[in-house]
Image (cartoon, rainbow, N blue to C red):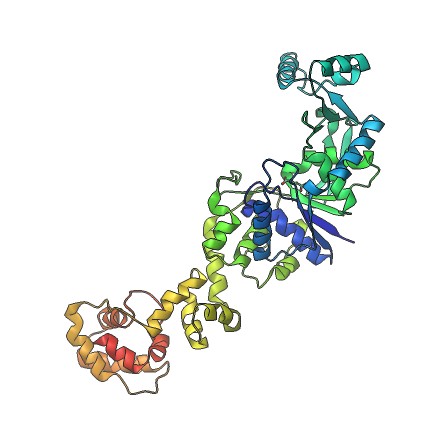
Length: 441
Ligand code: GLU
């Protein structure tokens, strides 16, 4: 059974960069008939907020991701405490008393002597009396995981064989002096408890994976398969930080982008798959396998989202648009087909629909009043179709002697109030004779 998880910390909104692992996990679960766990990494009780967690659920639902299970680390401390006790009993988790200042000084000294600035494990040689003395001074221990200090090799589904040498790392702190857990231990305990088969996350976690594999093994579990994807960056290759509020999923939604356009950009940027409109995240799942994810950064270009969004709207069938049109108080397949090519955002349709239903304020120049009256006199009787425009303007060309822009532009400005827009050949029958006469007058 394939089981994956997306594990955000609910300390803020998720943005496009977070949507990438959210979706890659989702697509992997879909493609393998697997299960998707949404795990809130909310052990930091100060910074984590329920409202952020709820907002993340809303954002995921909008993107088309519906978790099979939601867990909150803040409700699972018993499991972490049990794992902590086992590791302490095995001697793999040990108390340390150094203050941050002492650690800084030791790192500086190590560097000065040309040694790597890694933790020297001094705390491992403390005797019971030493510890009792330190605690009597009021020091509270933080707890480090004793690494195996050896190369850890794993086969990454995206990056191929990876080796992380834990000999070059400090024993990681799993529990702070105030007793709170850092990310590492709860993550591994949950991955074991929830039967996570594949950990799919950003490549900033590759060396964590080395540590975590040792922790899985220390806890008697087989490590999951890992897949580390490239991170989304801006066009210059800089990381997308949370400061980029405009890339928050909620912001993109408020901006009127199609969810599937955002999901596609989050997924396919930085892969060898061409960015084209798809109907659903299920369709995305059929397009992407992990071998197509590139190893370099995934540069996100806002113009590509704009263009993809427009292409999705321009090709959107009426039956897909109809319920959304209805919500805007609009209907009509001919209207939709005539106007959809002009849309940047779905809701732009409200403005464009006014070209048909009015009101339209003529933008024609007063100099053209006589010409427009002449045009009105020549307007054919209904019924109209897409040949009406050609017949009408040919006749008008004859009588007025105008051609090209001087013939067409005043008509467009009078009939639509603007320079650009759909072909009048198509619009004319939708506007109808009576409204045309009003606008020409
Ligand atoms: N909360 C962690 C993060 O957002 C989860 C990483 C993981 O997937 O293990 O970085």
